[in-house]
Image (cartoon, rainbow, N blue to C red; front, side, top):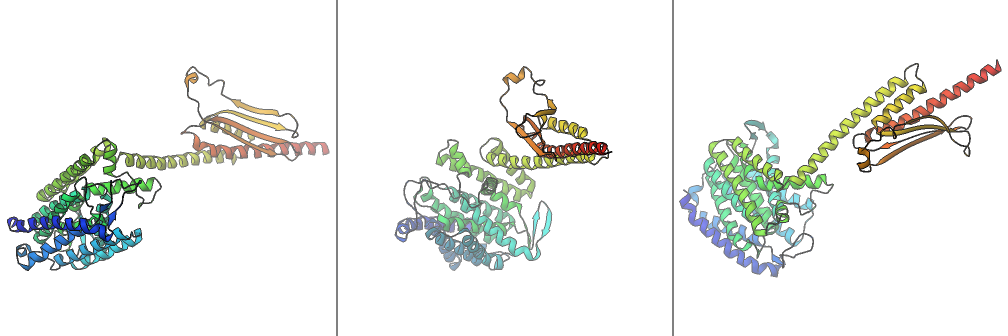
Amino acid sequence: MLVEILPAIGICAVCSWLLTWVARWSSVRLGFVDKPDSARKFHERPTPLLGGAAVFVALCLVVGVGYKFDFLTSWDHIDSPHFKSMFLVSGGLFCVLGLIDDRWPLKPRQKFLGQILASLPFAIWAVSIKSILIMGIHLPLGVFGLLFTVLWIVTCSNIVNLLDGLDGLAGGIGVIATFTTAMICVIMGSLEAAAMALLLSSAIAGFLIHNWPPAKIFLGDSGSLMIGGLLGCLSLQTSVKTATSCTLLIPVLVMSIPMFDTIMAIVRRKLSGKSIGHADRGHIHHRLQQRGLSRRETLLWILSMSGLMGLSAIMAALFKSELLGLYVAFTLAGFMIAGEVFGHHEARLLWGHVTAILQLFGDTWNVLKARIGAAQIILAEDTSHDDLWNLLILRMQQSGGTTLLLTSKPSPNAASNHLRSWDTSILSFDKKSVFRQPSRQWTIEYSTLSADGCQLQLSGSGELSHSNHHHLDDLYRLFILYSQVRQAAQEGLEEQGRARQAA
């Protein structure tokens, strides 16, 4: 059956190549041009943007002529009678949405709404998914099947759209992904979906001749959104194992490289405090070029990885082993992160946030234990300021403290009287301290006035480190409490003395 469709595949590629010539000529006259800037677009000259429209028109022409003259009907064996028509309708809507965005840039919400509307024809009339299979686990979707279908198609559309930042990249991955999808469709028995995938692959290949570095024309959003959306549609049909259930792993493997890039972009932007829609130069092709690879070397490197993942998806479908595909995917991702090829920066960001959260829980637990211990001493009936002084010394040691001093002043201009002190700065000197790097110091002071106008001041200092900073807040509370208890005890003694004198 594959031999029967070979003429249509060749015609589609030639048609796309010719239409791309027309698109290059008409883009400038219609205003569909991508102009370079100093921020993100570094191509040398204004470049036409109607490549995606040429790809879609070529696909529609060959499909229409093919079914008109019956040389594609032998592949027309599929459960859904509306697959082909809704496939092209949704693809056309994605293409029109991209054309509008290329000419008059849309806001992210407007673009997202347009993607949802473009997905609906295929999701409603072509493929009905009621449940998904993940590693043998059956997850019923019920009434949420339509929502899942729409979100999957929109996600695939955005993934390819985000990846379109290097000459030939989106088109090259599109060719690999659609060809891989076609092979899996043949294995699964979805022959019409295989025909559509092969024709789409050949149409992208015809355009790719013009888009190969240095690109003479770009896909534009009309192409990247359309290719991503159609890949989402094809991957759903590919994964359908029964009339209503699909396995999710196969399409994920096919799109794993662009998905990995998109996930890392989301992690990077969220953990850096930026909007998900904020453009940056942290995508996989940017990272590879930063490591010294040329544009063409970067493109070939990414396409090689995509080809490897496509092969693993075919093998997983052929041997019905999802673990095989997962093993290849996680191994490749692990090598990329460990070798600092891509994803290492995002992995460090993620680990830093996880560490901060764990540290927060640890700090909270340490503070809780400290306050419970303080409450046990404070609420005891025989609590004295001597007990609190010893507790203060213990907290000072936990906080890296070196000096603790309690003074009083009968009047603001009078000299300070030293009541109590604790000092370990002299005793802690050793030979290593001579070569130690200077550390940050902390100082805490608290003063209060007694009833007779005497000023009581408690002060402490020490070295700040990552392990003791969480004790400082609790230490300050103890400063306040000790001063209050000391003042209350002093006032009690004075009141007893006045009582004796009166007696």
